[in-house]
Image 1 (cartoon, one colour):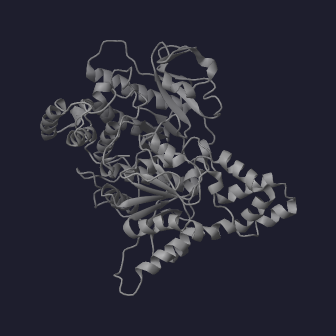
Image 2 (cartoon, one colour; image 1 turned 180 degrees about the vertical axis):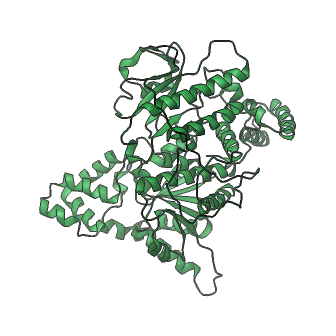
Image 3 (cartoon, one colour; image 1 turned 90 degrees about the vertical axis):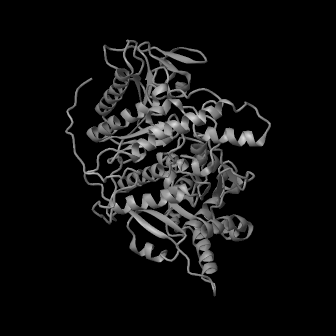
Length: 577
C-alpha cells in the first residue's frame, strides 16, 4: 500500500473530574464550531453489520478465517468454504501486513469497504505483550483505512465513519482481559482518529462491555471536543436519564442520516411516481405540505401510496444517531417517523421495544409510540391534511401519551424542527393545562436539539421547551449533524452507571481494592444461587447478580468479537442501553 504522511494536529480538550463530570473551569463557549475539529471516537451499543458507515474492520487470522456472523457482509465470491461456525476466505496476505481490504466491499452496498485485521497471534507472548500486539493491529488498520480515498462519506456525512468491534476478544484470546484491552484500545483509537481525521465507532453489544468502556472514557480528559454549553447540557441530560426522568422524541432528521427522505423529499419522490404533468408538479411547491400530500395521495391511490411507504421505510441499516439514542437509559420513546430503525437499533442490544399502538404495553418493558403510523402497518400512516385533522379525534389517545410525558418527564427532542401541526397542538394543550388558574409555575418540559441557531423559533417555543443550538446558523448541515452525534455520545456515556461489569471476571483488572472485596463477596452469593429456581425471591437475587455482570447467573458464554446480545434484565435506570 502506498504511504501517506499525515500531520498530527493537537487539540485542547475540557478536563474531567475523577467522578466523570466536566471541570467547571473550562472556558465558556456559547456556540459550537467545526473549526479545528479532528476525528472522534464513539462508543455505541449496536450491531455493526447493520450500522451505516464507510468502513468495517473484521477480525481474522493468518488463515483468513472469520466467524459465521460476518457472512452477510462479505461478497459471495470471496468465500471458499463455510460451516456453522466460520468461513474461509479465498484471499491471501501479501506479506507480513496485518490488514487486508476485501475486494468489492459488501455485496449490494457500493462504497462500504471491509477490512480484515489479523487479531490472532500464534506466537507465545506474555499477556502484556499480547495486548500491545492487538492494539498495534488497530493502529495499523486505521492507517490503512485512511489511505483509501473517499470523496464523499456515506449519506453525506461530514467525516468518514469507521466501525470496529472489540478486536481480539474472540479467537484473539483477549476475552478474559476485556477491561484491560479497552483501557489500551480506546487511547489508540483516539490517536488514530485525530491523526487521520476519521470518526471511529467502537461497536459493542455486551452490557458489561458498554459499561466498562464508558467508565474508561469518563476517566479520560479528551474523550469529547464540545463547547462548554453543550458539555453542561450533556451533564444535565445524562443525570436526568440516570434518574429515569428523560424521554426521547425522534424526528425525521435522525432517519435522514440513514438515507431515508425528509418530508419534502418524500413529497418529491411521490410526485415522481404520480404521473402529474410538469405544471402540476411545479405547483405542488406552492401548496402547504399536507395539501400537496393530499393531492399526491389522490393521484396515486391509497393502495399504491401505502405500498410505497411500506417499501421505502421498511427495515434497513440504521444511522449512528439511532444507535446512540437507543443506547440511552430511557423507557419511553416517541416518533413521527414511519420507519423501524429505532426499534431495530434497540433490539440489537437486547432491548425489545413495544411499538404502540400496535403492541401491548408490558410493565417494565420500554416502549416506542408511533404518532404518525408505522410502515409495517401502512394503513396507519398520517400524511394528508385530512389525516392530520382526524388525528385529533381518532388518535386522541396517542396524543394523550405525549401529553403525559410532557407533564411528567423531560422530553429530549432530536431531529425535529418543531413545525409539525400535531406537536404544536399537543404543546399548546399542555401549556393550557399547566397555566390554568391556581396552577403552580412549572419548569419547561423538554429540550430541543436544533442543528443550527434559529433565535426566532427558539423564542417562539421558550415557554414550553429549551432550544439548544448545536452550531451557528452558517454551519453546514453535515457538520452540525456530526456535532449532534458527539453530544449524544457524551450524554450516553455520562448516563451509564458504573456497575454493569462488577462481577464480570474479564473486567476484574479495572476494579479498585474495595470493589474487588465486594465482588468477591457477591460471587460467593452467585455460587449458591440455583438455576431455574421457582422462588421469586431467588429469581430477584439472580436478576440483581446478572445486572452486576455475573456470568454464573446469566445464560450463555462470553460474547464473541462482534459481541452477542446476552440476556439483559437490568432495571431501566441501570442500563447503559
